[in-house]
Length: 142
Image (cartoon, rainbow, N blue to C red; front, side, top):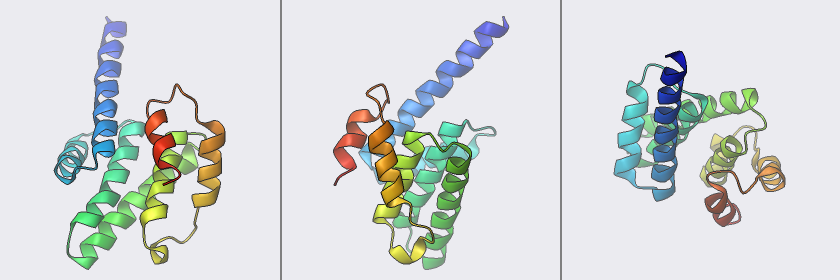
């Protein structure tokens, strides 16, 4: 019985992460905000869900008009993502998201620029088994 519960929970988490990846790749504002709300309403997040919640908070900063809210969303998401990466240094997908955030954020928002280190790490360590392999390879140099 316990094994069945773990399988169900794993499947649900996998489907949710697949949805997060799809929404991220779409860059659709409405979908980003919707899935961010879903993640905010979840009591317990996996590391992958926490990564996407952080990324979507940074993206939401781009959608709001109030400068205080922009800074608040960005800092919350960016700091959370950095903490997650500090705990999971070898995760290529997390480092890719930080790379893209730092690449597109105003330079004055970023204290420690990881772009060069992250880009080199991603290129050297990504495998074709990575679910976002094609997307990452298509976007890393643009």
